[in-house]
Length: 128
Image (cartoon, helix red, strand yellow):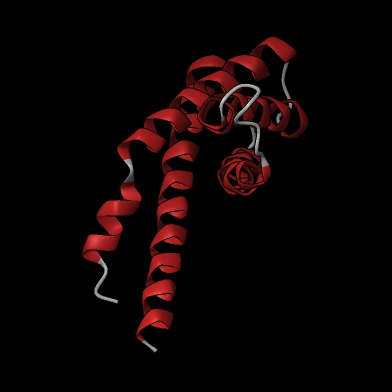
């Protein structure tokens, strides 16, 4: 029973962590939109942030290429960059240069959020 509660709390803190990261990435995308284009849809940018922050950890768990490039390089840098660029191209309506700029800035925000590691703080704060 204790193990079930600890796994549930861990899962809850990770979901909250991803949702907070999504909100921060969305705010960064809105700021970038206000500076660069002023033509991006708020729903599309939120969906882009949400999908990228859920797709990358799932996809990184399936990649096992330590002998080729090193799993840290692939799962922390290459795969998220590819996901952000693809989602930017698919979900945003603007010129391709603007989409690429927005995707790269969102990727940089993503890297900052990964290295801040909100999940450990949330696991310490959540009582369950």
